[in-house]
Image 1 (cartoon, rainbow, N blue to C red):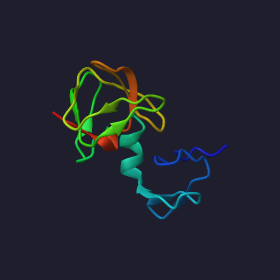
Image 2: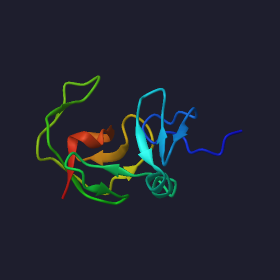
Image 3: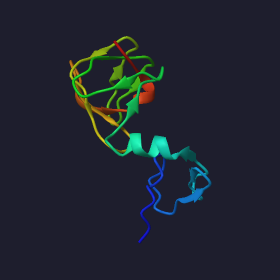
Length: 112
């Protein structure tokens, strides 16, 4: 089995090395060996402005978000306290006052 790291974007195992860069043939992402070493130590999730997020942070919603299966809306400027980062499409688990537990995408929040 190959000892090359999986792609940090799509998690594909079919990466290959081209000189000092790693390349993913499935999504086309290229990264250096230094980035692969930094990414291997844990989950790195950034907010809409590129600021790194961590468990327990407080974030603010930057766009009105419709709640699926309900007529509720999470309004712009809603503060969400004590977030938890998870792997997946919706990478933030949280509890929003008045709505309840939700999963959010990091691209719709900014760090406070």
